[in-house]
Length: 299
Image (cartoon, rainbow, N blue to C red; front, side):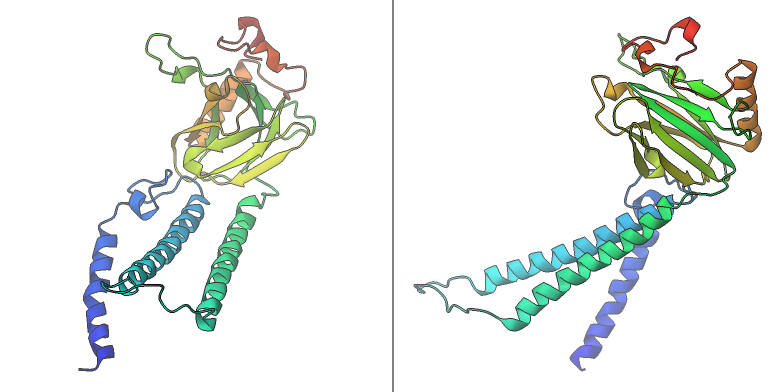
């Protein structure tokens, strides 16, 4: 039987074994063990699948390159080892044109390919919604978060807000009191645009399960547009070292139904937390290691 036919028949069981192995993987395993996925297959946002795809494909390509490189290194070590009785150096070659062309072209193709796919996905991630269902302003401060839910009026007099404090840790157990963390509410399956602003130093807005983060600079606005697609509670944190209590700069994201979202905004309105968040709210009132003053509503 010709060698090509033997290879073809040998590839069939290998392919079947690979398909069977992949079929037995969980959703998390298929997405490179990244957060943001569960067994029913519903991602956390409309962009999560794309980010995970770029991640896993990159690792598969890099692993293939690694296996080939390691194999060639091992083959050279074995085949060109010094045999018993040999002395001196083996025959030296000044150059090998086919190998040099190969080593130039293949890395170039890999670099261009990685750049092209990354630029494509980044363009999608950085495209902002012009008319989102929900627009929110997230303020970062040392060391907590404030959230303003924009209204329809130009002066944002109909906006509502919540103001947070840094994570409060139980001195005995070391556990964070989740009930006191700032919480951002988002309606499921609605287009969302978050304007990101800093009051002091550079911060970074990171929702771990959403597989994306963006930096926040004082005097410069960043924005992030996406659609949350699965209800749940998702942890967030500052991903930029921003001072002594950086590790306490935590928050939660609650993705809820439209009815729950509307009810939450009404609860803020009932507390009198209306209007825009302005510069009069100083980060310095949020003392490290303490809760916000009772008369300051967490300013």
